[in-house]
Image (cartoon, rainbow, N blue to C red; front, side):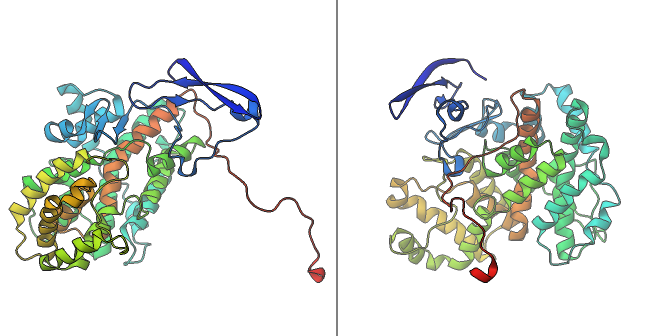
Length: 431
């Protein structure tokens, strides 16, 4: 925790209270209210915790006004343009970019942990064939605690390390198996001769009957999707992982909790919502109609994949993702896919319209990632599982940081109670 050099004064009913203030390395100052209830007998009220710092962290920083996303101080556009996913994983986990030797060892460790326990195959077959892949992922990741007993003791630093590696390595395998199960195809085992992104694509799209070669442009686009979604500060799912871990739950249960939270359409389902909107539009010739509807204050329709709750200027991830989208669409073409053709036309129409520029409603990372995943051949039901596998390293990094924090205590939010006060029970015959 940073040293307090300033304080704020709160006045309640003529009584004043001095509250320490902390200055971060970046971002707004923070008022420390931990002793407020003990000293003043009041709580603060902050639905959604949007003005509350629940922890101190050294992992990720977002400046929404500037359109800035930093991982351990490194801008996301530099990492996405010059690095790759597993190197970013190392950075998030350990706080520094690896040397060549460290990266080689880390990549080897992750690669050799990608297979899951063979008995977990039986676990998959207990789900209905039409089960949503996210439902399977929540169950399968949580069930890892039943198969990997040697990495559930959170008090042991070595077990925490092993659990971290296993989660980063095995969640892509679980996601690919969830996809294969949902379409009735046999599971494809991971291959140690492929990199992280290519291996995931191979497990999703290969079949035993013939050879499948991953196109390097597609693999690079997938790697960028993973990199750009690796961590995003204290969002809903990350906060869920931290809250679950504050109770001392095992790491697999904590990450399963994060996956469950990410499943919500307001969080991890944005790119799926974007594709569904494109399907509703249907064809490029209907774009002017929907642009007009988006401008109409009385029309509930809004363009999905434009603007961002956190980024008030532009999404720094979108520029890199647009480059990947252009590369993938150039490779695969859009002529025979009305959804992709509509997306390209909508992007150009919105960027050229002064209304969207004035309101800073630029295409965000979800708009472009949905286009890319659609072009690759993934159904929309797989969009959120792919988000989950990319975010796993962020959750794990936040979990490791929290466990090692000497200030760690079980989360216990307070409330503004508006219900009935104490009243006596009335016997049923007298009601």
